[in-house]
Image 1 (cartoon, one colour):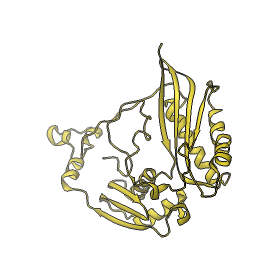
Image 2 (cartoon, one colour):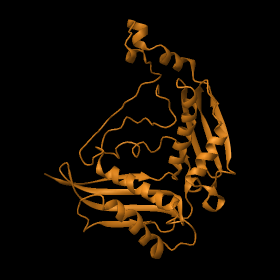
Image 3 (cartoon, one colour):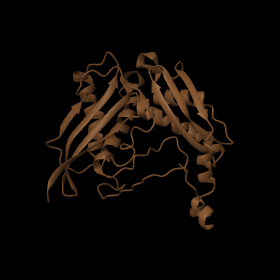
Length: 282
């Protein structure tokens, strides 16, 4: 067997790309809940003080896009200009049109039905586009997910949990996690490196306060769930130092830019398509 290292990353709900995903998904959810046959393709761009929502929709439902945007941003935790973004006062622009009739025709009347008069329910489901889809499973975890992405997700969720619970009230919504696992062949044998970067308030001391707090309340509870050697573990907390400017003020966010985070963390192939803001026919 040959030893190797494999790394995957995740992000918190306050990462700009994930805010964009959440807004697109919230618009989709609102429409699908009213009309299950809604055709939805909604993209979001979020940047300093602004949210732009665009796309194509055909539906019998109605979505209060402006309200959905604000509620989503506020629920994530961006509720003050002190944090770099405020869902109460941000600008919201909306540019949503109707789905192309050409695309709709391919979904309404499937190729198999048009050409061979198929009657099987699966054959009757048309598609408005082509795409490559890959599934993957392994025995790293009981969820059958690769361990690097499983741990990266768990750390990101824990980082959000301690922020929202008030345990680490100085944390802000934006954050990233990264985990490197040592493998021997296909078997995970050790946790090599953990990296966590979290946006924080101006006054907190990264070295004296944030770093030990994150190790104690975020990293240790999650790594203790995994029975793997950690004696040579490298831990990097906010390795770039100060991370006060974050969220949409630090980087523009776009729907569909975290497709590897959303799947298997790079352990499997990916066809390139994103999930968020799209109805099942997409």
